[in-house]
Length: 105
Image 1 (cartoon, rainbow, N blue to C red):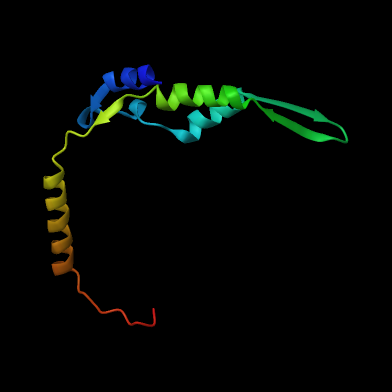
Image 2: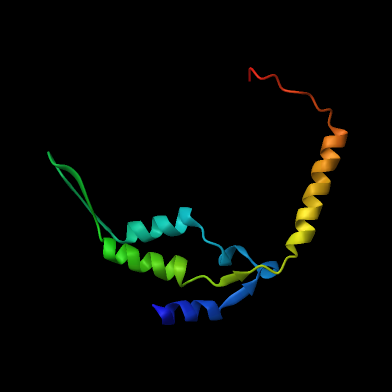
């Protein structure tokens, strides 16, 4: 387990260089993992029988989502981001009329 963690930590990418392929897309990737590790059969009078191979799903999940993606390094200056957010909120507060909300709401 230690070797898996050290292997993943060696693959780092700065936040400024992230593309969609570096991110996790659960919708498509997870669906593909589950479907590829599922056996389905249909028998008249019995209905549909679906069997999941959970050990393969777990293995593929780890390969795709845990080991298959690099660690993202946050190279943004968080203080600047918080400062900009605060200034934007202040600007909104000044430019948008503020009304008190009744306690009944």
